[in-house]
Amino acid sequence: MTLKIISAEDIVFEGEVTMVSLPGTMGAFTVLHNHASLISTLTPGNVVYEENGNQTSVEIGGGIVDVDNNVVSVCIY
Image 1 (spheres, rainbow, N blue to C red):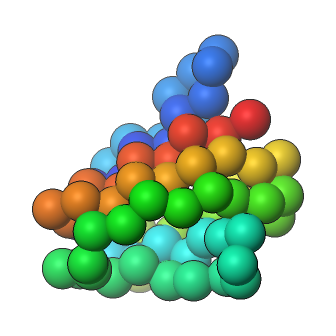
Image 2 (cartoon, rainbow, N blue to C red):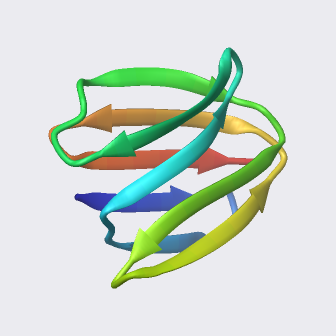
Image 3 (cartoon, helix red, strand yellow):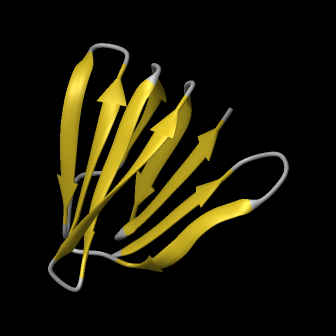
């Protein structure tokens, strides 16, 4: 699936990943391939994604996420 992490200033990450964990307002959750479509607000915390077997963490101050058709779009602030 494709992950896009963007802020007002920059594209933080864009690429193919196998897993994304996000700090949702109602609790942390993980998105895998073929996840159901959703939109959620995000709280301060870490977005963790796995790319080529390696996990990377990006600290965020909050934002929103849209999951649709194996594209995870994260807008952060």
